Amino acid sequence: MKASDLIKLAAEAREKAYAGYSGYRVGAALLAKNGKVYLGCNVENAVYPAGICAERNAIFSAVADGVREFSRIAIVGGSGDKLKGYAYPCGICRQVMREFCDDDFEIILYDGRKQLKKTLAEILPCSFSKTDLDF
Image 1 (cartoon, one colour):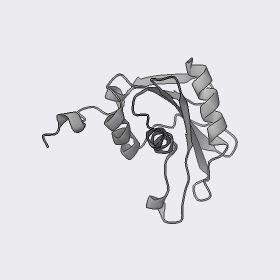
Image 2 (cartoon, helix red, strand yellow):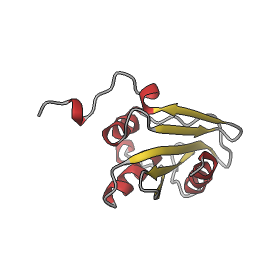
Image 3 (tube, one colour):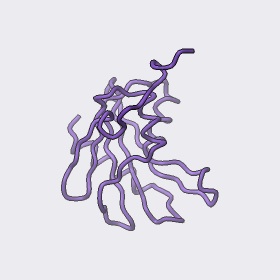
Image 4 (tube, one colour):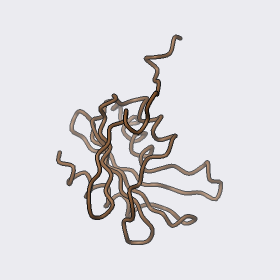
């Protein structure tokens, strides 16, 4: 699937976001290695830790569907109706991605004008995953 297709789906998911506190709505479209796409949007809560980011929403939906291998994700964000700047994943989302994704997992960011592509290794250097732990 082309990056532009994932961006369009992420923008559609963003429309469903519940951002009653920050006003910053985020949408994500996650492409699984099996070709299926999972959408996520941010959902805020008065108790901030009870909310969820768009990226984790998409990943957790996929995991709940039995899917655990992913190739890329598109993320868009902004206040109101406009996309503004690149909506980088937060630290928690980056670590959740690391749990299920390889270093070359592609993160596609879109600011309404141009795409920026990063790998997971680029945005989460010196990370570790379950394969690095000795349990």
